[in-house]
Length: 333
Image (cartoon, rainbow, N blue to C red; front, side, top):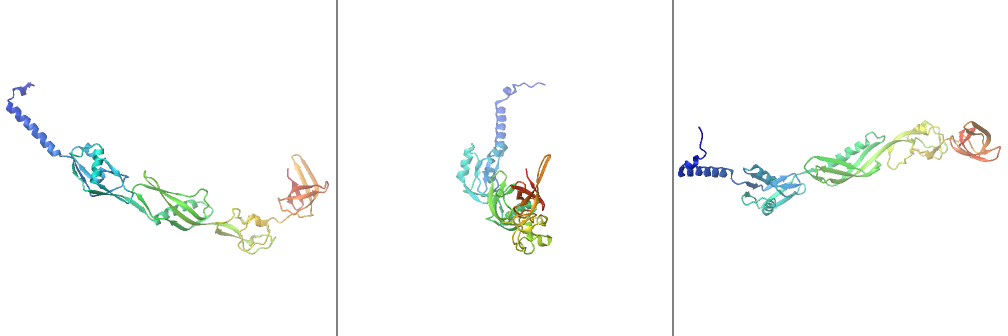
């Protein structure tokens, strides 16, 4: 059966009016059910982000989900610093809504005279900052020949940070000698927030094992194993050339008197001279395929490997030669 598309033309006027009335009534019912979009602001709100959105400080309800999301995304202003509170008045909130291109007139607005916004924060106390520094120094000491001992860590006030994923790093001055008092910078990063840093000062005792005199040693005293001991001492202020292996000095002699506990250095010891002024020695001059020898007379004392002046007894000329043993010197080419 076919329906005449012009059926409405044959309907009585009264029937058409009834149908139209039903449609209008249904539309009114639907509109009333949806109602206006409501914005109910809280008197207090805690937020973590660096911007205050309307959705952070208010509950937004309405039938149009897209419009609700748009309202919730309206930026009301900057958040206070972490741990601080900011008051937003009703006029400022309405102004921000208007500036976003939304007419507040048809909205069901419930906004108190002031909305208090508090920025969520995390506080790191001195003990926590000290632990960060302590772990950093322990990392620096790992695998080092010397032993580091932390004597004291001093930090300033606790640091207040926004909530979020936290990373920390400790920065030391370039070419730091890990001994004595050292200034350190502790840097905190939370997400994309600007970094924050605090200063800490650490006192470190770096002990290193060195060779010291076990007893008083007189001038030109030949050194044997009983004269020495290896001892751990504070490295702060120690010269860089301290002797660390007893084998380095055993068999040598002191150049001057040395007190008990003195840290030995190359300038305090020497090889006993193998030759002295007036000794007769053989002079060797040697190059590839050619070897010349002559007799000479030493003009100064010298130990093994040292350069000394020697007079060639054939030519009466003084040359410099290196001591090989108590009877031989060699000219370097």
